Image 1: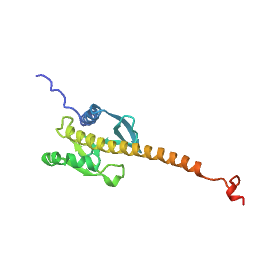
Image 2: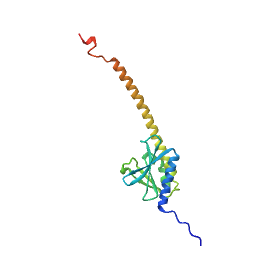
Image 3: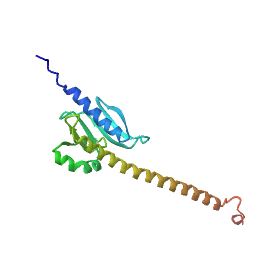
Length: 167
């Protein structure tokens, strides 16, 4: 009698799921970095060259294999697909890590991974575009402020050398 192939263990399924989520995020042009908060290890995904624009985070999951933590705007995009699939979703806003929702995945080939990743990337790109526009506007205002300061410095009179004040 041939031996049965051993089933994939739970640890391996968890690792495979985290790897799949990370590879999907990287396929959308994000860079992923492993981080640690106390004893909790997680992976953040951000746009390259934008250290403060974190799009999503990959955490472990007690209820499943892995979870993707996302912001409110990304969750609203993904919500219809999550309702259809009756997904396990958790409110994580109370942990104050910058994310409001965690979607739990129970296997590496879950059909919800791609829609959730796309939602987080799209919402993150919208935020990034607003940030870039704000930075551009701030630079423009700063250059106008410097020019205005220089103009006002030319008009300013020195009370010691000005003849009109020495009468």
